[in-house]
Length: 487
Figure 1 (cartoon, rainbow, N blue to C red):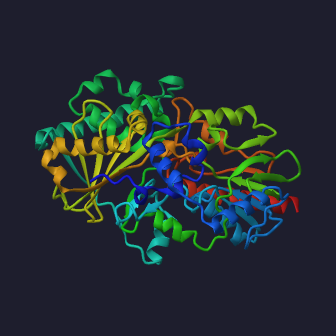
Figure 2 (spheres, rainbow, N blue to C red):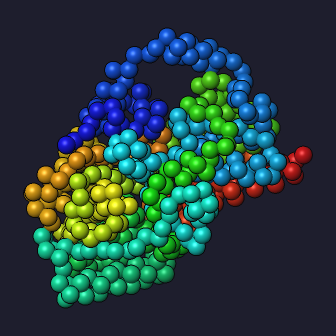
């Protein structure tokens, strides 16, 4: 029933995990990684490669096949922002080197096919169009099956579906939520009071559907408890239409970047931006370029996984601190049939009494795969537990609606743990209450040549793949303008 061996792991996300493993020995991720690394025996060819890599670390420069030895720009991170920056620089005739610490491109957009033998998006799943998304156009042009989210939602009270009167009450609660969040966002509320819990008021959570509505917008979307997300930031983000891709969002991004030259397993450990050029130190050598575009997550920056010389200005460091990495983890549950019988891609929510519950997207793409999603403090708590505990937690939520016999229909379960992946440090960025200016400060360029990119720096589409893509293009155009100005 529960599959926890090598074939169910996501090794592409854990390149830096060897060192991280022993810092977190009690997490289910660490246990799984330990099984992989302890059972892995390098072949002779592998040993020779490791020796070659170790020797190459002594070399002063890094040579990448298909990339210039003296690039105009070095792009750090081959997630969607880095890929779009590379595509844009190519259009502009600017030379570049693109590096990433992972052994694949795509960053936090990845589709795994080995866990369930059907596409499973381990990170981003919803394709947001606000109003457009070039990745949707790319998917259509290249034979992917993309379709608009049908928006079907079913609500339960215990083991029964809601009555019409209960549904009307829920809708009134939803309207009250939006009214109070709007009042807070437009009322110039600043500082610690700029949080959804305060904005909604204590009475909101005493209503029958208060916690359910708060969870829909909060832990199941913002990936934060209501006390930890900013109404100001949320209100000023663009609304969007959601789309799905049968083959997986990560598959689209991988195809989008398939022709871009990139050096994988090449993580940046230091960026020296104090001289006329930018010098990036990696495990296999150094790269000297006239400019750099940094697209790593806010979580990587906050963990100081990259050293800067000179140190980042105080304002930039404060911005990094003011942007949290929200946690949103998926509990994938593959069944033998459509367990609810609601058809494909149906959201199922049970009436909640707190913010620790699981939201569900059932029968995705008619594959019988259910995504259970858990965010905020509960996601963090589950990351400290075993894989089996996390999967059981998701399954128990379904049992509370469908009964215990539903377990007989379960084929396999798996749970992600994005906060335990050192390459990311979480799912996506979230501004701390009262710190909405942090995104602009994080995105500010240093010394005209060090550009900060990624979804965390987007002012109207943060926390989205589309936001990362747009910022990748924008920073590449800024770098192009700088290079032309100083040439």
